Length: 507
Image (cartoon, rainbow, N blue to C red):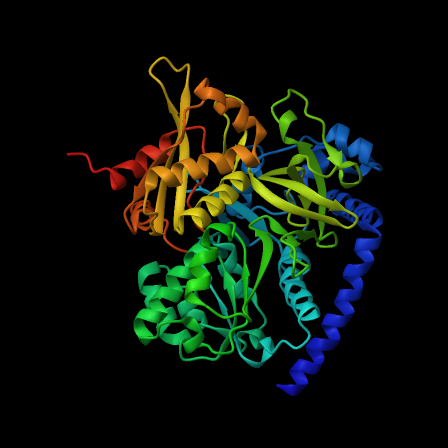
């Protein structure tokens, strides 16, 4: 273990120096990756279609190659999954990350190349540890096991060749070097189980036997596991099960709605929380400062970044800009070109830059996860923060939530209808709703304007959901575990209408 710690320390110091370099020279690093990606793309069918051989400048790339979403790249991906190769990227693609950013019935299968595994996802994991230890040099994280909340994968046989799809976390676990498996828990067979409820039971039973010093996972599902561990162990706090647990590396959804639950489960003053921005499409950002909730945009992971201001996203020809042109405080949709063959791909996330020297950002939501019935532009980031404020005032704790517009009969006015599952409900739900409404007004001037004298938006309608509501809904949808998330905000009532019967049974 001492040798491993020494080797890891040397590698981490070396990597910290490289991170400092791309922070100092962001445009040079991004330009290098732009040229390398276009060069590699010349050997693909996509590259031939857009004549990558004649592209020498970003201007030519911007003029010639269209911004795409999944539906536009889907014909290439469908062919890849049937065994064709060199369509989007000049190497064999055998892994596909099944995207579950929403619980819609349509799944997306994101190609994962060997290059993206090594240069992006695994590199991001190493940097996450490097930055953490750099911030906390007395860390003993390597002296125990790392608990990884992974998903599952399935195997499809095509032309006598195996192609794999599943949660990104499962793909990463499956491809980790053998020696890393010795530092992780649970074992591979449990980590990749399909049936989620049995998996949680077995994960809890195994992991509680180990000396766990770190946890990596999505906050919502990690809480489910921690509660099962307390149930099986008979302990009151996780610190009694794992006294040396020191950090939770989290991503997928904001930690904010779950903060109080984690404090209750792990009431340790020495516990650290470190956010990452890791999606099926790539590893994009890491919280590099321990005292600020911002993510350093990682610029040397084989990804070329572009951005579109959200307010212009629906324009016929929205302006796409490079990293050098972004401004602080503007809400952007992120466009990526990657070393897995996603060309000018509109990932669906929205971000705001909090700093441009170096480039740090916050995730504000999804391009399709917001409410804008009357121009209020309510984003997930607003909702998370407002719920935190309301919970603090009402001494409440939230488990999950979702919301959608509620229109009047003549559709001239509307409100936002919220289903909120509380771990600790407020004494007065009406007062909670008022505190929540006021918090939203303070955080979002557009919402405040639409709420003026109830002329356009009425006060929010808040339903307190019974415990386990969202779990039962996800189970009904066949979406338990992994990276599945509860959709937060929507302009459509489709998801809300599915959940309301769990809250208000129809007699």
